[in-house]
Image (cartoon, rainbow, N blue to C red; front, side, top):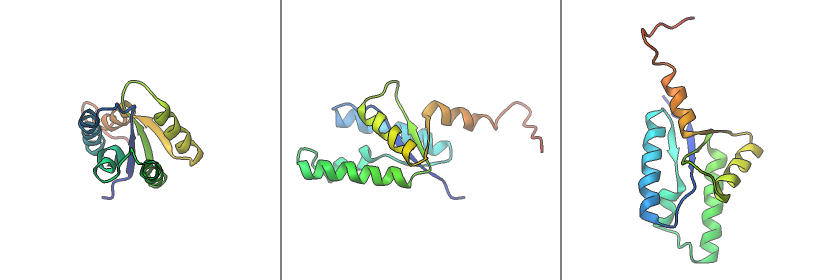
Length: 120
């Protein structure tokens, strides 16, 4: 079964270690819900130097390209910042479904009702 791509966004902090831990947790939950998570904050800092203006711009462009290829935008965390708002606006413009992590997990749980009876 092919898993649809799910782009992960959140209000990331200035602490790269904190971001990596949060991003990994979000990605695991999205993976467990049946998606292939894409989270640029997890891998772009491994090879791009954000303090170099051209590489900062390239990082934004690479992340946007991943968002364009995704089936769904998953907004994680309990607040929003400019990056999250921009991701939501981009997804809306591209007609990509946007939801929250709680929304993904709620939908995943719908198929696990007591008794397991399914109606055709």
